[in-house]
Amino acid sequence: MARRISRRHFLKLSGGAVAAVPLTRIPWAGAETLLTSQDLTTLHQTIVKGVQKGSGSVGNYYGLTYGSGEPWIQRTELGAPSSALYRSAFSFVQFTDVHLIDAQSPARVEFLDRYADQQCGTFPLNAAQRPQETMELHVFESMIRQINAIRNGPATGKRFKFMVSTGDNVDNQQFNELRWFIDTLDGGKTITPNSGDPTRYEGVQSTEWGVAGVGSYDPEYWHPDPVTDKYKQQWGFPDSPGLLSTVIQKFTAKGLGTPWIQTYGNHDGLIQGNAPRTDAFNAIAIGPLKFDAPPPDIDLCDPFASMGTWVPTHPVAADPNRYIVTRAQYINEFFTSTSSPKGHGLTVTNQANRTAYYVRDDVPG
Image (cartoon, rainbow, N blue to C red; front, side, top):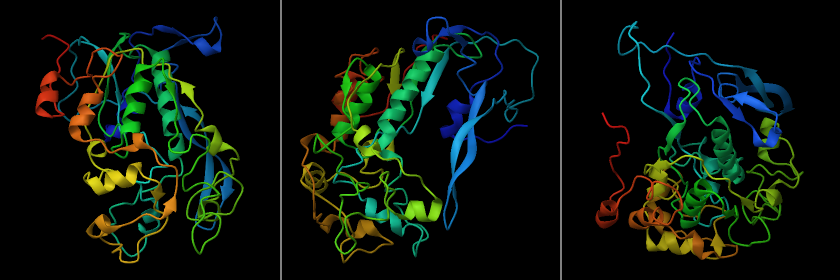
């Protein structure tokens, strides 16, 4: 039976019955370990909910485990099944909504997230902070290494011709986030998933964050260190001591072993995908003060109305690499890359016209 799928599930569901099964050598598993591309995809196994790890007043926290694989899903919405023979033109990979995020940026408004499920039914910033967001760069690197291990389309046996990242490559329109995206895909470069103070994590999940009238930390966020917070009380989230100091450590990117192109999403061109760049916002992004609470005159049901008058008060280390890129700056950065094709879909015409859309056809006919 066919079922509707979103673009977020495209790659997960695009594996299928294997017509050809090429072998892949797994470099970290030893020279004798050979797996098929099928073994490394959801054709072989999926990630599913595992055993309960914790409990809270609202719900429970579960670990993850491996489940059985998913077969082909026959799609018949556009026509009846045919007995005709098909020829595969090429095989490709899709990434989408990677959202590489500077989780410590002063241009973020994490404090708004707590109001999303209260009096405003259509609150626009209901994902202003996510418990896992400090690990996004490590997840991205893991995705790249897995694709390199698979190497070939599991249904066709053909080497991947390219990868396309279909928007929201970064989360907050910042220069450092954009360089993380390009440099991690290029590979061979040292990636530092940190900003501001080079020696420590300065974001809202730190137990040293400190909020006026609350104490040394803000219980609205999940804290990996062993303190009490909303996520642990209501959902049974676990402790993970040392996580925040571990995730800001440098690593060497392996690089995607296939050409890649990208598209321009709302988070690539708007602050947190919602607000346009202004000089005032840019000054906040690169400056030494971060928000820790809403201003007294904020309309929680329409925060954009007064956003331009907000003044952050929490001291952090300033970082000039956090500047908010214009569309022209976004386009230009892709021409500082060691990958092929140069420009990653964008052309000199895009540079001249400051347009982020293009057409690419690598398969004649």
